[in-house]
Image 1 (cartoon, one colour):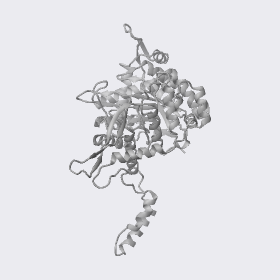
Image 2: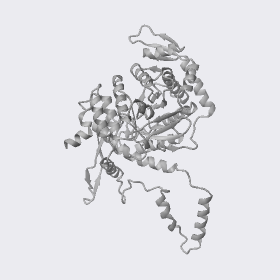
Image 3: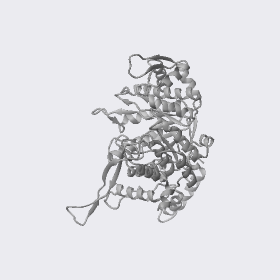
Length: 515
């Protein structure tokens, strides 16, 4: 059975139906005039061969073209794009079935950061009371490694609210280079979680090796099509309205293989997009529609996700401000646009501006996570463990996020109110009122056993002490100690025999035999 996710019965919507149509019309007009600037020859030729107005740009050091896309090409592409997509998994219970017209939310990790944040808890003695010690967290950033990626996938396998896994850290070991990075990051993820795995590609030349690895694990090419264990995210559009050469080439190749792919756009309101909501929405929608159109022209029926990572510029530095209210507004608007097109939506929430876990991180994350969840995106990249505008990953923060998402899921449970329930309640009240104590204590235990009431905050300290970080870190250690269902030995051996560039240390069974 696929993962259940959270069905949002009445998604919150910021835009009226008329405003959604206006954004769509504006985006179609933008794609026709001024159109896009394209740096990828194949994409330009694909659009030209299907009736788009494509013009060569002379005098540029880099080959480039203007592409003006007729509205009919876009609407035809939207008709061809599947409204339902299956994202497979090694464990069938972790498969995700996402439908463009069903606001069923799945929580996904990501994105790939360069910095891994370790935490230590040295004890400090109070100056005023030498008998009192306090454990104060100290955070230490460093470059991410393959071992870190394995640990992240391992912990996320056991985090209950994580429905799928986007790689969380850039592997920067000395043995890793552009040629072998992709196969190692995909294997590290696939071998340490049985959930769906999504990532981008560093080098297009490694796509076939990654796909072959997934085919071996799935049981063959046809089996991978039925149960796509992996999907890809491609930022083919650089805002404003530019098709990047290498990522567009990657996108085309993924589409030709028929594997699920995210068309992702990430404009920054105020710099690479208009600062006003109407402006960034018209632009990001145009950019995503352009990518979806290209995908369907390359291979009609390619499973694509409408991907949105909009952000507002900080007014002081012009850097990203993921924690701003407007960023959440843009994301909710994009969810509505994807639903308008009946397309599965990759949305973003929970990214914060602060560099370490703390009060600001919690406020910014929960504000965004709650509201975007309530808007009903299907594939919610909700930034488990991410800090500093997606630049830092902290495993302790991911464990904290899991606890907070459990609270959101508890809040969104359907109320148990029906005639049978109310008849039982009336009897309870009658019985209790007739007793001297007039207390409902005897009725609590069955409700607790059934899981109908939420548990206390799992990292609650004793007395006046705030031990949230320390207790979350202890929970992280417990999760790392739990076993993971690795890929079986025979399949692992075949992968290492047939896929070049894998680091020997990733072979779990060789390590076991050596020890």
